[in-house]
Image (cartoon, rainbow over all chains, first blue to last red; front, side, top):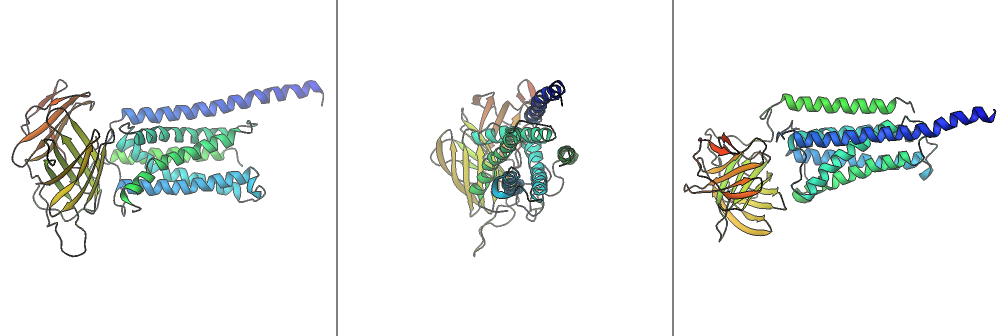
Length: 190
Length: 216
């Protein structure tokens, strides 16, 4: 290969991933802001579909968020595995588990976020609910960013771990400001 | 990894989210029982429908709908607590300029409610009355209040934005304790005539009875 042919593609490659990453983060940010705006403008209904067998919607949400948190731990472990830690990088099951655990975790949070957004809205009555409201918007924005960043080619090496880490940290913060509060106020109960 | 897989995940999540929102919008309040309801009383008053002081080991439970109201111990402010199923709403006011709306849950005879600025209420049902503590603006009051049957109870009127509110506690003896809050500026509430409208932020609003599942 001559040097002139070699130069062109690598120039395009170094420019494109930054744009791709910025685009992914931009869309995620728009999602986060959009959720916050919807939560603030929509008149909270005070009610949402309830699930049989639980004492209250709060209990359903606390347990679903806890399930998502457990799956988030699976995410972090499999992610570390995929990136060469834990000696797992050659195991074929690691990536599918990461994808499916991730999908399940997000699925588990969807009824929670629908209830939070629709019935309660963006709240700032106390530090706990303000942080929870902000993190809720942030978490879904970060998740969208990570999904949009994944197919991008030649991302900076730190991009996926940082995005994945932000998603995991966001969910942890959400669990701490909701499920943990619920279990310490009402006991570990359904 | 297929380069489409994240888009599949996103599409699936967005689709499920929209379906859930649509289901919620299609159902109104009262669609399906929200909480396990005790056998409902035939009357529509807020009187407890079954005796609460049960002998033996079973813990007392709140009736499926009830309102308790009264003065706090050794002080002028009043407290009203409305319970519907497992949800609870409460109002504390001194009839002058202090008030606090709180929401939370009622479960197995115990109450836990919170409001803004760390206001909180904890209570227990015993022998048909609720006793506990309520903390408002950093001050904690003890209380023991009995049932408040209609027309006594808790009432609220608010503007369409929710930034102007009036709350009234109507006690069983007919006295009213109420505060109006116009975007943070509080003052004694006008007299409430149940069923008649009051002026809130330039509009006539009929005060609503609070049942317990409201979220402020």
